Amino acid sequence: MKQITTPNSLMKIAFDTIKKAIISGEFRPGNIYSEQWLSQEMSISKTPIHQALLDLEGKGFVTILPRRGFQVNKLSRRTISNMFELRRSLERTVLIIVTHKLNAQDIQQLEGILNQTPQARNQGEFLEYDRAFHRYLARLSDNEFIINALDTVWDLSDWVGGGIRYGAQTFSQICKEHRNILEMMKMDNAELAAAAMIRHLNSTETRFIKVSMAE
Image (cartoon, rainbow, N blue to C red; front, side, top):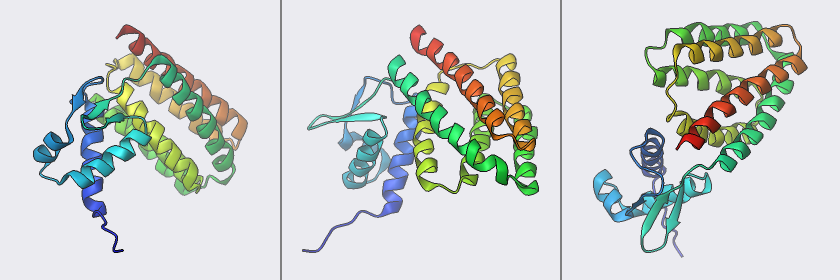
């Protein structure tokens, strides 16, 4: 029997578009949306949209409701805590792996990200630099399983983080925490670098929990 496949490009467009709408708050938690309506809005057939929704359901963004559409999930305090438990484990492992093999080019790249971060023109741009720092470290691990797992929790982190209004003091604190992580790496001390990452993620989790409790 001949298999019918959906073009990956359409699935990716649908996935990225729906995910962006969720993270930005355009699609609200608890609301139910029709796949047919989304298909018409995006001018894409229902098949790639449904496949994208299946992927998003697997990543924790939505719940598919048969014959009704899909519902955007609400991130509970427990979900956020579980998310950061995974982040701490994975990102600590990343630093244990990569600290001893950090070279001059890697340091230059990371320094470049850190130097650009305070120049961000808005919160969205600042968070892009924040994620670039974490993603660069993960890529150095050369472990696709760690990278793929972190991509999922970073997306969820962006979702929660989008609801936080950062002040200048918070921006400064995040920059300081990132700088401290890199300084420990430059000292070739993986344990201290990992400990600095844990402190950074703990403070981030605290901010996220405050937002979830206020809703």
